[in-house]
Image (cartoon, rainbow, N blue to C red; front, top):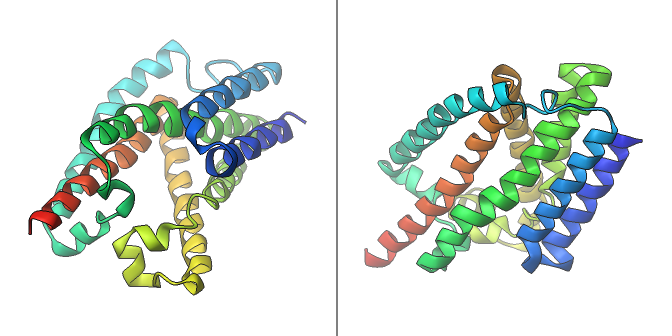
Length: 231
């Protein structure tokens, strides 16, 4: 019952964010996060179960610095080669002003995307399923749902990202394979984030990794778009 309740909240949030009220993205994510935490409490989960107790948060802070630094190094190396730069060429970041970029990196991503997705998929769902079926089931189910969560936002990926266009095309026929590839990629990412959650015992560690990939992704894509214009 409680797991189904979590799924219902996530479906509603996904529809609001991607279809019904995209302008209220951060607000929707914040409200959905609060509702999920209330459901978790009613299901008997503790802060320790969610990776949010004091010990877990201290451990997560130490891991966060390492993970964020690692992502930054990988992205900088990516800029050093032409193929790597192509992956950063994304229309969703190219048209942003400096203020819009800062909003995405410092507000929308951490207080919207990361807050809700990590609370939902590596926090509440993972803990609920782990208590009932064990760690492997928790990782498998939460990662699969994490992939499906990206079905709607991945529909335009073949038109916005240059690397995806090169690999799959930009026409209507490439939408389905693009969405399938995006779901598969986010399922794999979900497994990695769940493993970070398991190994560190903290929800803060996968949240930091998630923010680094998304936040630096926007920043690097924006920077590459400026280089291309100057070139």
